[in-house]
Length: 147
Image (cartoon, rainbow, N blue to C red; front, side, top):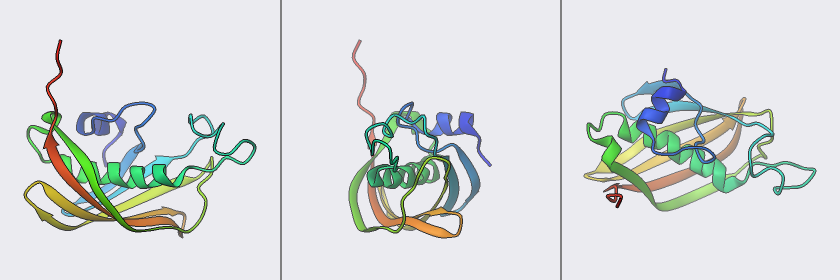
């Protein structure tokens, strides 16, 4: 299990865009992570007023961030790397995700070649699939910040 401090050490994302709260299981080629969905998140006042629904693109991003933990955890110089989306295929949304839900993010490695990877992500609330997608990515060197 990896807590929020461990996630912050692996991923470059920060508030308000960090969408993984805890890693429940981690093994070679597979991760199960948790995103607690709360009403206090910045997108809910506008999506949708009076009927808060987590945007589908953020569910996909949460799966991608879980995949980022999977891909970056063993990279020794991970603080100098970023992972960019290169594609999202076969994406389907099956049920709305609302405040109070716990989003379980299961991501498995389909294939990897050098800096490129394809991952299969499934986001569940309880036993129901909320979303699923095939995520393609590339690991790149992080640009050097200028003073």
